[in-house]
Picture 1 (cartoon, rainbow, N blue to C red):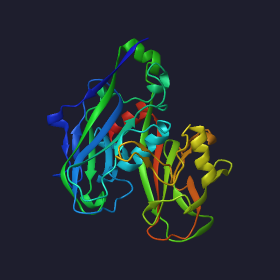
Picture 2: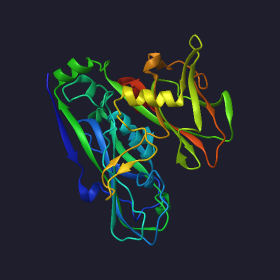
Picture 3: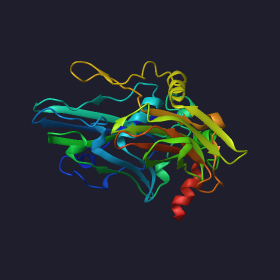
Length: 357
């Protein structure tokens, strides 16, 4: 049994998006190759800015320049995330070792570089070595698709911070692809690919408009597939917060099952269980040059439904699986942002895409 993993940058002239000259535009597209299995998509955002004075920065900068990232398969978006949430998910997936991030400057300077890298990973275990099946158990068979593209919606300079102007900004991708023969494929995934998974991603957001007790703040979770996990970002007055949400639970209608967590203990469980080390401080840590950053998980919790044996929501109705929370009183614009991941049978998912269901 053998397979080969290759890294492939796309053609720089054809497949690099000019972000600086396409601000506030939806649907900028990169066509992805369809000759091999797709394992990872690295998304690299880089550019250069000038500042006319001290800047008030968006704490999600520079990722906040990209509003949405969509993986479009056969004309349908199967993964929709905003770039900051994808970046934060990488913190958990790579056990605290995240792709490079250069923050934009905070003083009046010229020709200041910024860069952010995030990864769409198709494995259920991104930390697994390439020889481990869990590193390739949910790949995308790009060679069998009728179309495959990556689409992004861009923001404005103000989404990074104040007093900023662009010299340039661009986005490009590097792919990890896998080649294997038919015998290896059948040995790994079965003759009908019954052992192959497909990971779907979607976003949800809800404003916190007051203090809630007795878990009265609620958000419906996706149904129709197996719910794997949800990355939760709590925001108060525009800043990630560990105090605006004090506790939460997931309610499933099977035997009235509940998974109840205090926010602090859930974050500590992430830190210890995922070996995130000291990533619980209130601020990110960086060198004086601003280039080496140890990220904080302030305001972030990864709610892994493995504690419930995952949530089989394939036959459940919308509104029957609910995330409920207790919240404090907001001090400004406050919200909960969620990135959901679902598992589906790859062949069933691809069949549905091909028939438009």
